[in-house]
Amino acid sequence: MSSRIVELRKGLLERNDLSAQLLRERFAQAGTQVVNLLSSPGSGKTTLLHRMLEACQPGGSGPRLRAAALVGDCATDNDARRLAESGAPVRQIVTEGCCHLEADMVSSHLEGWDLEQIDLLFVENVGNLVCPADYDLGESLRMVLLAVTEGEDKPLKYPQMFHTADLVVLTKLDLAGPAGFDQELALGNLRAVRPDVQVLLTSARTGAGIPELLTVLTPQPNQR
Amino acid sequence: MSSRIVELRKGLLERNDLSAQLLRERFAQAGTQVVNLLSSPGSGKTTLLHRMLEACQPGGSGPRLRAAALVGDCATDNDARRLAESGAPVRQIVTEGCCHLEADMVSSHLEGWDLEQIDLLFVENVGNLVCPADYDLGESLRMVLLAVTEGEDKPLKYPQMFHTADLVVLTKLDLAGPAGFDQELALGNLRAVRPDVQVLLTSARTGAGIPELLTVLTPQPNQR
Image 1: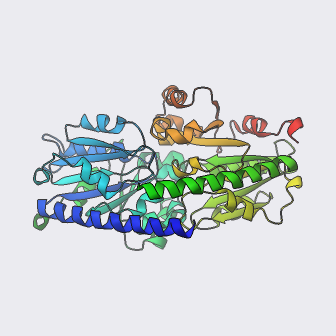
Image 2 (image 1 turned 90 degrees about the horizontal axis):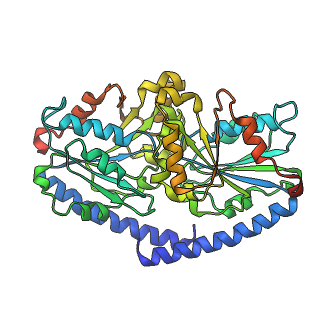
Image 3 (image 1 turned 180 degrees about the vertical axis):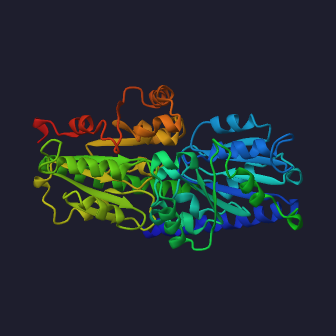
């Protein structure tokens, strides 16, 4: 990249960091826990999110949390329509080709929502293991998904992303056998770039691991 | 994005287009067919490439082509080391966090190679369904992979990438059953963004579809 681009990009990231800090303060004041969901395209972010939103609804199997979601995509509002079936408040952020979400996109899509009424806000990023790593969205927790069908080497090849993760969730565990997934190898590669990160194993299809995941994501009493 | 960033990015893309055009002329003069391989992380680019390079080697099952590869990754030279086992000439391009390959990265990694001795050059891009779509690498053919484990909706959600494809290759067909992949739905979504694109079905694990793919990629006599 040319030095002018590098410099402008640095300025852009600094401005994003300022916007993210304002968002973070706003979320803290309202007692809203915010989870930034990141992964490759097709790692199962939306399906896992659907299960979590359903579980948090009245009558669901999960904790009694008021959960909501913002979902980012380059194009279409398919995900928001699909997730709204859960009954939770959901809004789509269409980036029109932009490869990541930015803090200002999150702010502008919160308009009209009373954050005091939201305990847990999911922000599903654009599917991309590179660019979204650099953009703080004011989240409390950065959750990176790795599908067992993607292979064991992804943490080594996309270290920036896994290096910033607070929580790594292996997805599609029901396909581990057919895909020949070597879990020890994958976890070894992950530890090499992010030694102490918490890891959870899930399958949105069977429901395995989702109660444990929701326990980890539930805001602690002093946060609420 | 700010207007200054948009303008600088436009300049960067224009410079890349010029470099790509020079590369394209060089490839044409040498009679080298160049394939830009694009997909999400973990869609099976490297494994499919490995099978194709092996098949083209003396004693392999494919056409007698002198094949070589450049492989792009944000970090590690694991892929180049793995692919070199095929016996073909392979070089790694480490982008150090950059989310796509550019024409100049390709040029600088060709140094010392005699293109006249290469019939088919694969350039494996960084795993990313967004950013690499904008960067011409002087290729003859743009091949976009979609793994059946990624879901049927990816063409709709990443239209820029699929819109520029000359050839779409479905990968990991051996996992279509376990993953519950709906091929008709996926192809319908693909046709919605790229109506007449050629589609091939492959499995690097079983070898299905690889001879057909190599037939499509083999330069025609008037190109050589």
